Image 1 (spheres, rainbow, N blue to C red):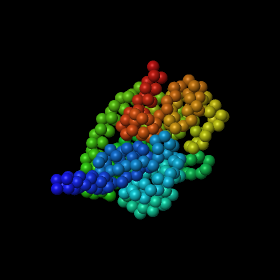
Image 2: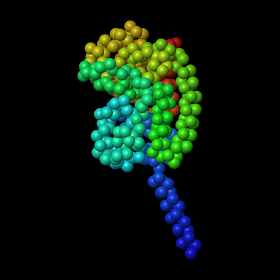
Image 3: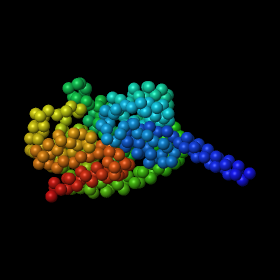
Image 4: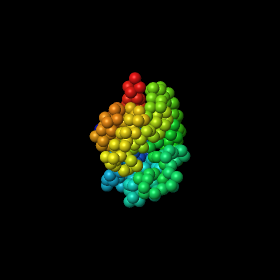
Amino acid sequence: MRKLHFVFAALGALFLSVSAHAEKLRVVATLPDLAALAQQLGGDHVQVESLARASEDPHFVDARPSFVRLLNQADVLIEGGAGLEAGWLEPLVQNARNPTIQTGKSGRVVASAGLTLLDVPASLDRSQGDVHPQGNPHYMLDPEAVSKVAATIAAGLSQVDAAHAHDYAAELRKFQEQLNGAKSKWIEQFSACKGARVVAYHKSFDYLLKRYGLELAGTIEPKPGIEPSPAHIAHLVRDAKAAGVKVVIAESFRPQKTAERVASETGAQYVALPLLAGADDSAKDYFSWMNLVVSRLSEACGRTAK
């Protein structure tokens, strides 16, 4: 009899464990940095998956069959918005046949909602390259924008899972407090970089540069999404030298040789930066990722300022 009681108790504990796991909110984020933020805000109440890998260009994510299954089972889909995933997300959502995550539904969270974006084009035509009609979608490198994004995600989780809304609000407050402390540190780290001129591969770092007083002097891409020609590289190097550019930056997934060549011929330092959380093993969450980006860029600026 004791053995039977033990077996039933064990089975009951197992059932409760499985049930608790099954009750977690299934959250799918398009990007690793959004996934990391959702996990921090959701805590034990959420199970989070990212579609894009941190090593990928978020504009061109290779769709995999597993994506449709994840989206079919999702309670919440968090997308960056601003056209960043326009080339690959919507067909996956349609194939998933999940009414909860369709555009405008409660399970669809657009992280860029309510943000004032940079680089909104006055007009659109093919000659401009791969521009985003709604503006630059790489806002996660601006801590002020991330503060709003966190609030948007917390509100989205609360709308779908009202039973834990109090917990999501509490985690949001903790995140905002941590962010306020980090912002002061990042401002101090960039204090020696005010006015520094930088060449970037793509316009991925505009928000970061603007927030901390650095100037984008040119891009290795002649236009967004267009690979550089030898003539463009020659003109860029000439202009960068004249402008006194001391740092060249590129996302870690970009062709390193091109950026290194521009830096070498300009007499500048080259810095590879992870565009997404998780692209570096030491930067899996939002704060460790931003700490790494800020440290690498501010240290390069500081060395060139000496």
